[in-house]
Image: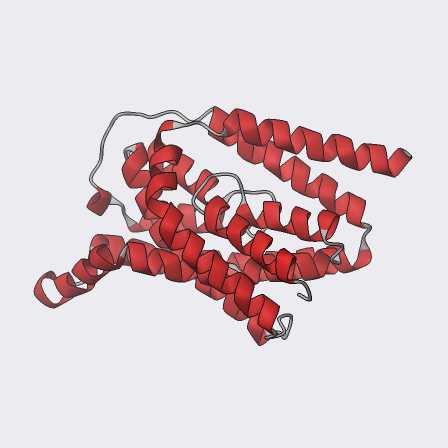
Length: 264
């Protein structure tokens, strides 16, 4: 990054949209490429980098629950939720690593307008999932998740590295179908998001896509601060509001905009 306004805007957006089922990665990639003129592959790298800020925000917010999980290991052995998080993280990490390299290759070799159309299409997919979300009212305990569900949810989370697919959206929808209440589904989804966010950002650091300049650090700080301040409110909002129509409409607008640019 080379602009203070850009750093603040995308940091704030990451801090807010990470807690909503609307694809923070898709939003930031679109903003960085369409408004701030970043190359699509650079926009994706910065979007993944900013997950480090909201991952630490999640660690702060869920610190008591995480400490309780690790304390229980000493008394009762490995906690079912911890086992779920480990398995789903490993599975999603493997799948995301394969997919993100393919996406980066496409972004380098494709036109920006096609990338916008891809993001719009994935937003429509996310919106449809959210719109069709059903609460089965089983109200299963958060500690009753099992390893089979972890594998399936881990696979879904791996595919959420595709810009426009909401990680929290697809995982929480499936967790609800597995019997969790909307509140517990969101909690498990965001606990999953902590290691996923750390892996995504560390991957971009490892392959050298991120330069540690003052603006990228400022953006990360804003993502963390806004993430900490907004998570409680936005989790409550996400519990009661179905964002399906909003994401569907946004996806359609992105695709229409891409078509206008393509044929103008």
